[in-house]
Image (cartoon, rainbow, N blue to C red; front, side, top):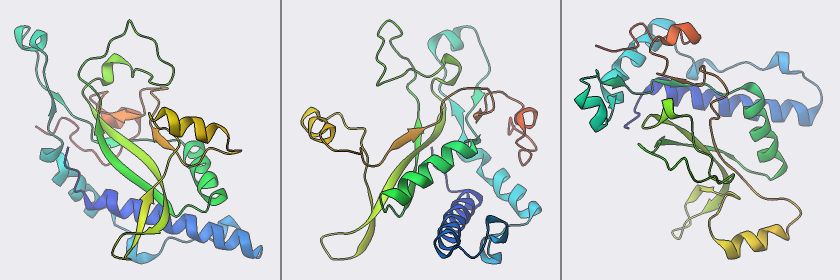
Length: 213
C-alpha cells in the first residue's frame, strides 16, 4: 500500500499541533481546551479534501483474491480507504507520551495476513476478524526525540511489544513499560472501510465513490 495522500499527512500534522497546544495550555493553567485552534496552515477545505481522497483511490487498489474467490468468480474487493480510532484510544496514547516525554506517533501502513491459523490461540498475537484478512490498515508506534549517528535529530520508535525474550524479561523489572505499538481493534464495522463497501454508511463522508470504479 502506498499512502501518499496529502489529506492524511495534513490531518496528522493537525493532530500533533493540537496535542502540543493542549500540553502548553495545561502546563500554563491559564487557558482551556476550548481555546485550542488549528492553524490555518494545516487546514484543508472540503472540496480539496474530496479531491485528494479521490486521487488516492487507484493507489489503494484491491485485496488479493484467494483461489476460492477466483474459482467462484467473485469480484475484487476494494482495499481500505479510511481508518477510524476512538477519542479514548488517541487520548490514552497522548497521555502515555506525555508521561514518558515522547514526542509523537509514527503511523505505519500495514496489511493483515491473507490467512491465519485459527486453531492456535495466542493472546499476545490476536487474530483479526476474517472479514479484515488481507486488508490494509494503520499501525501507530510511539516515538521519542533522539539523534542518529550523524548527530541529526530524529524521532526514534520506542515500544514495549517486543519478541525478544531477554528484553521482555528486563522490562518486566521496570515499574512502567515504555511506549506502544497499536493497531485498530475491530470492535465494530466502523473501524476500517472498506469493509463495509459503503463507507458513508459508517460516517466516512469524503468517500463519494467507495468502490472507486
